Length: 203
Image (cartoon, rainbow, N blue to C red; front, side, top):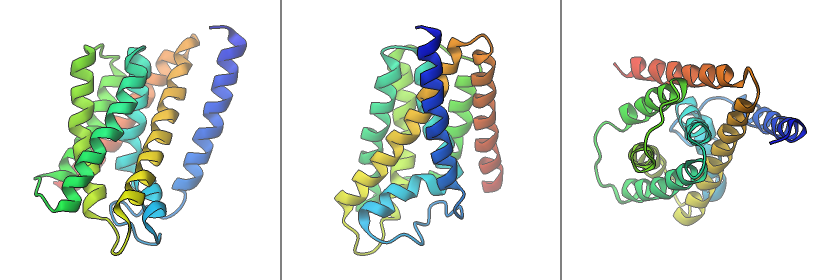
């Protein structure tokens, strides 16, 4: 990949990251869905209202970038698809224990996998991502706003999730630069720390 192409991708990633951080400047309403009406808008906003959701979803894209093709697109496809299944379980009221713990652990585990550049086999990587997607999806499902359209809500949070995965993938393109691998490792470590902070808060 040429240097000019790397710079173009990096610029696009910077713009997307700025947009995401701008949305996060709103009050962090993790797992509440408060303040946003309507199924689609609630679904779209829900993932970015909690740092525990944000860091894990960015980490999925980032780990996919670390692993390279075909994981770079399989992991970001696996996560939202399985997350939709988790959401259906939440909407149906089927009990799953330790949801908040699972969400916090996703940040810790995925962050460490990125920080240490763990080269897991594709099946293992997709399985890890799928397990954590169930927890994230379930949290979305149980907090479906009253009278909201479940289908529109699901489309909203899947789009938001894909956007966060894309940010992770674009961040991963920094590995094409001499200093990029250390930046990606630092990003993974930061994600793990955020997950650990949420985990500690649950203790």
